[in-house]
Image (cartoon, rainbow, N blue to C red; front, side, top):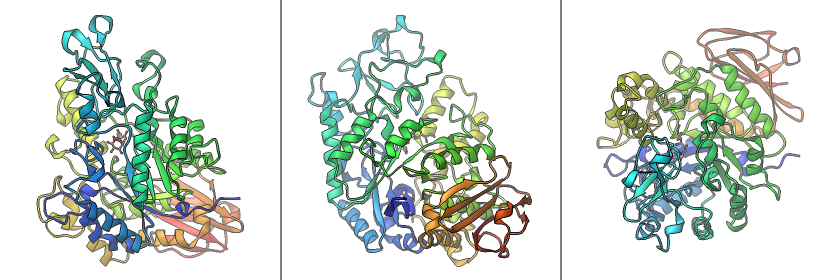
Amino acid sequence: GERRRWWKEAVVYQVYPRSFADSDGDGVGDIRGIVDRVGHLDDLGVDVVWLNPVYESPQADNGYDIADYRAIDEQYGTMADWEELLDTLHDHDIRLIMDLVVNHTSDEHDWFQNALTSRDADYRDYYVWREGRDAAEVDETYDVGPDGEVPPNDWESFFGGPAWAYHEATGEWYLHLFDRKQPDLNWENPDVRDDVFEMMNWWIEKGIDGFRMDVINLVSKPEGLPSTDPEAGIRTIDRVTNGPRVHEFLGEMRDRVLDRGFLTVGEMIGDPLPVEHARRYVSPGPDGDGLSMLFHFEHVLLDRGERIWETADWDLTDLKAVFDRWQAAFADEGWNSLYLNNHDQPRMVSRFGNDGEYRRESAKLLGTLLHTLRGTPYVYQGEELGMTNYPFESLDDFRDVGTLNPVRTALDRGVVESFDAVKEALRANSRDNARTPVQWSDEEHAGFSDAEPWISVNPNYGEVNAEAERADEDSVYHYYRRLVEFRHENDVVVYGDYDPLTPDHESLWAYTRTLGDERLFVVLNFADEATTYDAPAELVGDATLALGNYDADDGVDETLDLRPWEARVYRAR
Ligand code: TEU
């Protein structure tokens, strides 16, 4: 039988603190701003908050570069503010999970500062240091260090350029899979693991309810750090994901970090994530790593090219195929997380919906999908308001290191001709789409701050904002409230089997969810046009319309006429 778990029944709401709410008028969101808005979360009905990093950090990657794991960044407030946030959430029966960023630290972390002092420094081996290679022996052309040295291997950073930085004083290179201000920790060193596990337990003792684990499938690096192999189609990402000791390290974590039935969700980059790893990460058995669930990337890579300025064509059948495969993968054991956007992804309504004429309808349809598949839904701040992508006009509009680094490097090298040549793709792809301030009202700066925000507010805030959404019973916001409530009141939404009905249809996604003699029938029209659907005979007949984004009658007819972006959830009778 199905194991019941509180986190399977929960809806998670993701707060990106920098962009959520600014209480002290410096243009940057902060923890008090979140405390002030807990009412919004409570009204929405969510069960868990996932808080993006608020630790002390020079903010090279908005907090994913941590200088002190046990301190709150001044910009975001104090430890007392954080404690108040935890207490306030708990008072409202909302749990809190923290972001765990332990593949790398900031270069300003004490460990790294110590490591820089000499090759024999106490903390040298906390990071990955190697000697460079002789330029004459290799054919890479970029970034030749002093004395004609090139980096130890050809890996590329996820943010563009080589994954290695040369340290003059000690004459070696350190590995940084992300920005050069984010040196990778050396998990081969047992002291690193001790310190990480101890730090996790320190936060657990403070009363948190779990962790979201940043790029946790990168922590084990392959022996010998081999270069890529373009002939065999092996890219950097294939070298660094799901490494040889990753399950051993996570097993150690499972055994040594206190577990009070937490929600743990591992971010697993790479495409595809091999199913044998996926199963093992989330298997609760003795051979499993015991994570509650994971984030895979397959659906958010469909429309992406190799580079941030490239896009790819996709259609609905591709999207369904990805979800169908993952629904099946964890049908008996393991559990899915469900997300359509987050702080690294463009806004879902601009990407998978229609953010113009059908913004509201398509935001609700996507919400229906998110909340009626089998798994735990993650709502990203502003999603419940139908917030959209930002109309970027120049490189100056961007703040994200993951956008700026690669584009600037490519412009320098002439790989990209001009900003205009890549504008449309960056508009579609940039992480900054998700990071514009939450639109609370139609007041100046959208009610996010009294000051000019660190990144521009989307110009559509006059129409799209929380105050307007709350005032309108037909809003995306109120529909999301109903979705959350629906999950809480119906076990079939949580535990029911998923069966797809229309894998090959180009604009319809229909499926059933079945638990014992309860059955839901969901039908979604992913199109700007009306579409008819011949419902399967066994579903035709009496049924209650439990949810929908248009007015519709009870009962499933032989032929269902669905309006643009219409979503319906029927409860079979
Ligand atoms: O993200 C991992 C990651 O691979 C993405 O940043 C990816 O590069 C991006 O989505 C490209 O589309 C995690 C965090 O979520 C992200 O914010 C951090 O920048 C990154 O790790 C480094 O900590």
